Amino acid sequence: MGQGQAVRWWMVIVGVLMAGAIATAATPTPAQSCRLGDRAAPSPDQRTFENSALGIAFQIPANYRAMLWNTGHVTFHDPTTFEFIQCLSRTGRYGTLPPHTTLEVSPGVSGQDLTQIVRRKRPWLDFYNPAFAAVDLNGRPALRYAYSHAIDRTEILSYSFLAKDGQTLLTLSGPAQDPVLTQAIATLTFLDGAIAPLQP
Image (cartoon, rainbow, N blue to C red):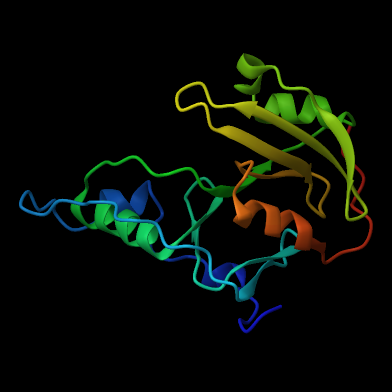
């Protein structure tokens, strides 16, 4: 578990709730520009990201920050990228983020077919038409699939599975070679027992 402590859900809210928070952020400062510097490498030490409501926990680099967005998704960033996002928030400017690992949270699941659930919750996947592979993710049924991003051609790897309520789709996704994603998948732990039955 490294030297960090468990990161609780309320501790990952770091002030960037992109809809409301940025809209009410400080007035843009024309003289200030936001520049993304060289990205910091993941530290060898790890800490635990934990969400008891979703019933999951996994390891992230100790120097990385978890950011909760108003969509309910959580993204994981190195210190340099985190400061860049904070600058964009303060100034009201726009910028392009480098590829990163994301935990997507999609509530309102119904049905029994995980492939169909993923297609309904992530409809843009039809553009890529990835091959879905059913896998066992530390004892939990999951789908593994990959595609090359249409713009920058980055290979994106995703694992989709259900949260403990059986009605929320979770997707860990990021660049296929991202060590943050690799570590998250390798250390993913489910904090609950069997998932609740899906609602028909």
